[in-house]
Length: 231
Image (tube, rainbow, N blue to C red):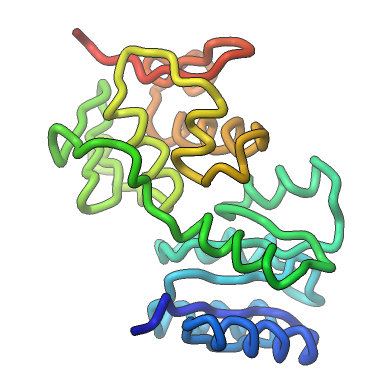
């Protein structure tokens, strides 16, 4: 049984070959794309669990490709591959819609760990009390993976849904950064607070009437976040 369907996008054939060999030997089905346009065509015509996307491709960059994948509603998990290791580049990848990133050159074990981390579900949280959650004008459909605000329907990415689901099962209490990171991304990400900063902001933009003055997704400075619901 396949561990998942992965689209590997890189303009360098040698890297694609190494990635394909590594992932297929670990049970994944792998399709290759040579550039951003090729990736967009494949994502539109096929279903993938994850896109492994090189950030610095010629013509259409990985960031542009990532934004376009999210813009037309396709919802695979996305890992951005970058040669740069600065916090700015990592946050830029997450802001574009990626669920995680890995830095070149990477080892086989690191790549596999990142893929498992992004594809994992939030198994630590108990079952949600309901399939829907109402936050002011926003109606969240956890089964459909979208937010409905009036007539506007916005998709939730896999990790946005995981993060919101975990917070919804622990309402009205402050959840530490470390607990959220371990629950949603895994124990190896316990100190990657930039993940939370970007993903909470993305959720606020989809859920809150005033994202800069949030009513529901509350920051507890230096500690964590709280999903504030009516008692």
